[in-house]
Image 1 (cartoon, rainbow, N blue to C red):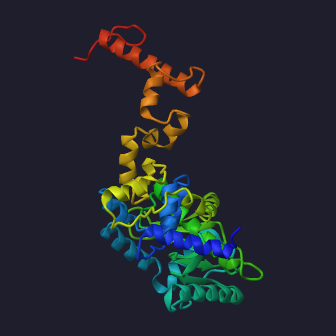
Image 2: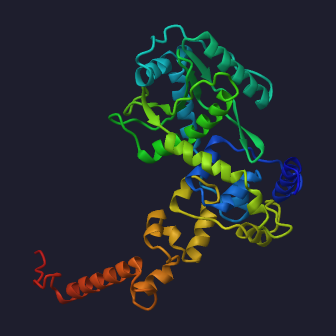
Image 3: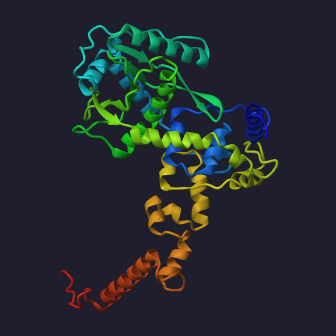
Length: 385
């Protein structure tokens, strides 16, 4: 059996070959890691992200350019709001953290804001770890503005930059996410809150890795502070969001990603995802890795348009959404669903097949009644004048 270090070197070499000759690896960020957690069954995304493939360039080369990403307007608005939240040494941000997460602690009147500048991502990560340790030893409130955290992903460090981290007087740490979508009457779009929670869960995992190297290890809080504009103003409001569920899912997915060699071993010899390859060869390489498409991928993955087209062409029920896929059991294609509904195939004892046939009968009765001018109870339907 190969030594783990040798196996790791072989895997890195194989992943480099998958990217293509002299193609630099695209580093994973928190958004990418959160998207992995949102679709843990997709081997295609796992291998492409694990190999550091630039999926935006890949989607363009495949003829399905990505529509994924933020607009320049949204980025500008978000940066302006974040600057307002962090003004005056983050006084407003710390006040929100005190009120929402730690009201029993002393008010954050004299908070520390350490300088986290250093050379390169690794240097900034080391400086952040030192600042966190010093903040715990000093006590009181501390705000770390754009710290740099390192998280091991498939044997390589991924450098992550949360909006902020707050150190509480008791030495515990809280991740802060600043978003530009509004909190309307104290609540926000659940889909956007869920995406923010998944992203914050990645930062929580990275913070836990830093905390584990200290003795005693500080507590990393599983309730993060989500700061958004209040209603339609530019005034900051905050909500405490529990990310324990998202953290658990992300941790499992990252563990799966570290076993990415299992996926690599199934690929045909010579497989390469370089965007410089001819379209037909590149398409064959991408299709050699199974994907698990769902409509939610449109807001989370650069290859979503390509995978959606393939899913629709194959008549896969996953294109209808995960909920429909779960209800249909072993019926994996739209044609199989229609055939079962018509009574042409399928086990009548299968609950999904039985439900489809009952729905088909009800539909036929409704159409027949409408054609005869009567409702489902046999009463004549009188049209409105």
